[in-house]
Amino acid sequence: MHSNDEFQYDPKTDTVRVSRRDLARLLLQFRTELENNASEDDQWRHMHDYDVSFERLADAVNSGSRPGTEPDERLRCKRTPAYKWPDLPPYQNGNGTGADPARITGGYGTHYVVMFRQTGRALCGLNFTREEHRKSTGTPDCAVCVREMDLMAAIPRPEETPAT
Ligand SMILES: [Zn+2]
Picture 1: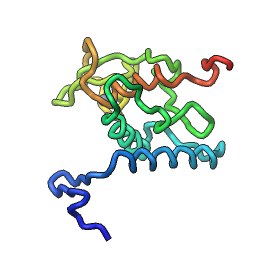
Picture 2: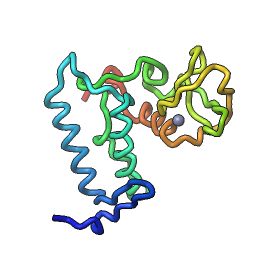
Picture 3: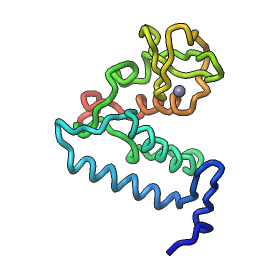
């Protein structure tokens, strides 16, 4: 039995402290099981509700990577039949283009969004109306939006993977 102390539970933020190694092992095994049990009609949906939490856990593991090392993409959704990716840019073309930086009014900062939509959705999942955003420049300050764009560049679609 573990005491609460071991995990340094913080009631203010409802967070616990866990070993980075334990978390990485959990995610690796989870991704393996997911691939092994993949089926056409039960795909894991990247950036859908539940997946946002899993990608955040991978962010936490990668935040502890040694400087200069690549993030561990094995902890993330892949371009395999086990996964369904959102049907909008930049996910469609898969090369990290097709989304524009925009500032969302109301203190929500800057995000990558698909500009042509009547109602918008940032790559991080933030929803907004047409009136609530305007074009911005530079890199958004939303870490999840930035990660999603980086993922598009790092995880090529199967047809873009060079034959070995
Ligand atoms: Zn965002």
